[in-house]
Image (spheres, rainbow, N blue to C red):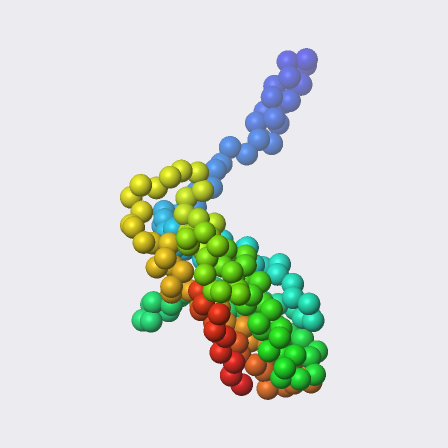
Length: 178
């Protein structure tokens, strides 16, 4: 009788333990095997870096980074919701955000030039963080700087039409359009 209890106990333990293992489906394995490029990774890191940005006078700020393959332009897109009362206030908010992005990426907003040779766009976002990459093409940092544009859409409660502010990463010029 004692052995019977022991056998029942051992069998019940084996019944409780589930030894089956699931494997990813073929379509999921495809995603697991596709590599992420440094360009993909850099865009993701830019989005994460600026996701919690807050501008004075803004109720909310949304960012997404995009790349136009036909025009070779990398764009940091911001949409800012605010209760501003005028076009001039909307312009100040747009300029403030553009200046903040420039400073965050190592560009002096007063003269439009990087503080140290090139912006931090490549080193902070588009490079391996753990090692020196000797295979990197010369001039990559400046190329990234030159194709990067900042666009801000200021959507205002009282100023319903919205104001689009657009500027290159390098330089001081900001274009405004309604």
